[in-house]
Length: 223
Length: 245
Image 1: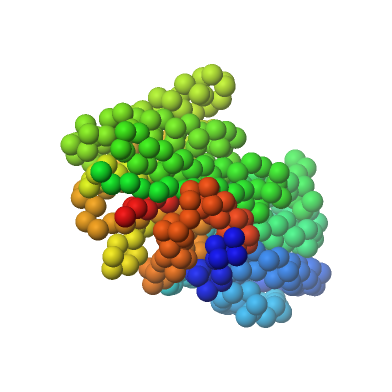
Image 2: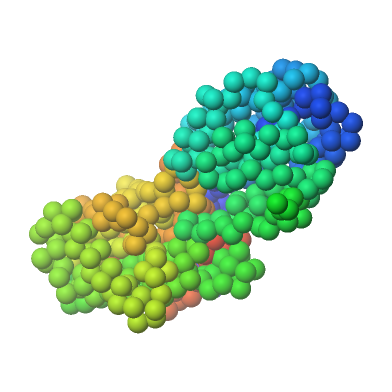
């Protein structure tokens, strides 16, 4: 059998299929103090967890957009080993509509980059987190996310933080999944869930339905 | 009459080993009265009986082509795809009823190549790849058809599956070998960025000139298990036939 063996040089490599994930995070002034500290810890742990997983680290591509005062591109899409964990600070009001529009534009551009490089990709994910109500017009952004979701081109996870989070607004972005309120400041539990979900997604093959992981570690499920 | 040597193998993927799931890829080689056929099916990920569906699809498909080759080859591709899929779906529906499962549980992709004398008939539904070898080198006969996303493709039970079953037929025109592979194997045999086929196909083709079918089948199995599977999480399979001089 010794002459019937294939070697590495006989084979080719393809880049891993990518899972683009955009975090759209509220950093308005009301997030000051413990909420922003916990959010920073959660984001750091999230990026470390993704990096630690063999498959997820090759597949996940993370971008972070914040809305507080203005809208900032905190982290651009790239492979995770090239990224640094941002330190988020709070400021001003809540331009959520502008932030979601920017995130959608970034996801679209990233998909075009994948296509031009012959890289396969999974349906993009967006996480939208807020502790209040928007201070700008969200109608165009909400229509865009709803159209994409209804056409199976986006999955959105709308998360409310604290009692003042305007869940009805979050619902407008998400025609399928209802918004969920975070249990206390359980950002770490949420981001752990998100990294595990990305790992499962990055291993999925055609025809495989990914069963959603239980959300009770981080979701306030009380009525 | 031309003679073709055939060999195939399938191995369970690393993620299915971890989840204690069976291999959902299946392959078949057959010869019916001078018609040489190879076929391959990759069962849908979450479908509970997709290994059974893949096997049944292949057995039904190759038996039907063996019996109706001359009639099929005279028809146009749209008729052929409709007819073949109807036969496969009839069998899968019977199975679903027998086993009290929904039809979708028996979903798989479908790849096949059949040769009689100097004429070939091939078909491809879903992902995976069909390559051919000619005197001038390797070429791709049929590319994977995914949806927009990496984890989407077309299966035997998909809506409008017949319109996605791509049929290829014609004179062999110096085709010396056919290679069918599932998407797990395609990851290391075809580079999407520059549309290049791996030198491994040429290496394997060389083995066919020197070794009997049993040795080839064993070698395919060992290489899928020890080399190709190590570069993917997915099930891996190949079915190959080469013309003997």
